[in-house]
Image (tube, rainbow, N blue to C red; front, top):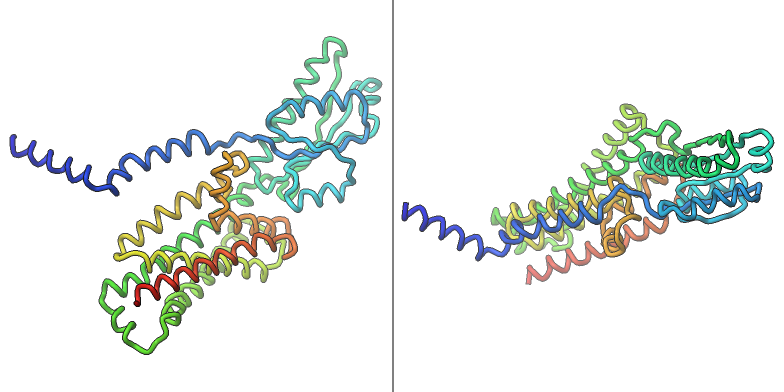
Length: 367
């Protein structure tokens, strides 16, 4: 028994001397509790709502004030036509539109009923459903409040979900899963490529050969680039023919931006491979460092706009966030390069930065 306690004491000392073990034991649970409990929420706050009031009477103003008092919406009043409203949705400027027709109050008093239209951006069906439900509740509450003075009134709500009328979940999850799969596989595969040569002892042969170090890195990345494009083709075929996911935009543009994300992931994988000494360490960093941030900060599981500002800033560093926006714009909304140039430029900058750091890291190790 004494020997057992001695060994247990020894193991405790080993655990408390190892900073990495302590980090995993205590740091990871704290981070997960804080993120899942405080920052990550499906509650909708300050969703951009455009109000188009063609009636401009006391009844519409009362309802608008109800919406303004809600923390779910951030109101912008405007007079736009149908085509202009759709243009606002195309470029992601609004989440929902509330449209009052002409003579709203007149119809409500004379005919005891009036209609209002809700237009929601259904590229994210969960958010669209939540916002429409909030809007319905606000309007129903208003009717109940005025019922003692004006009984038997009714407001007919016409709901229109654009881009995804059937509210299919695939329009949200397919772009997110594409970003997750491409990023994780490419980073994981390339992260062990160079460190594997070091472990096998074949790196010395490459170092003494006349082959340019830059070419070594390129040669490591090209096979994974081509295989990942094949992987992308399979994902798109399954999405279209098995999951009924439409591709409303240019397929060439979709392949182009996807290739850019693959290059970003390959550059990150090479950097990890150049910075580690074992395949196990490289794989652990790739999985732990990419899986959690990609799932949390891409936007397809948790709305980024509801997170605290520091986490929104961190999300900007995750490449999959920008790719997710691009894929939704191209595949679902059918937009062209003019709508996604900013996100494409950010991904390009990330790729160039990671590639330069990776090459410099490789040269430093050569010296």
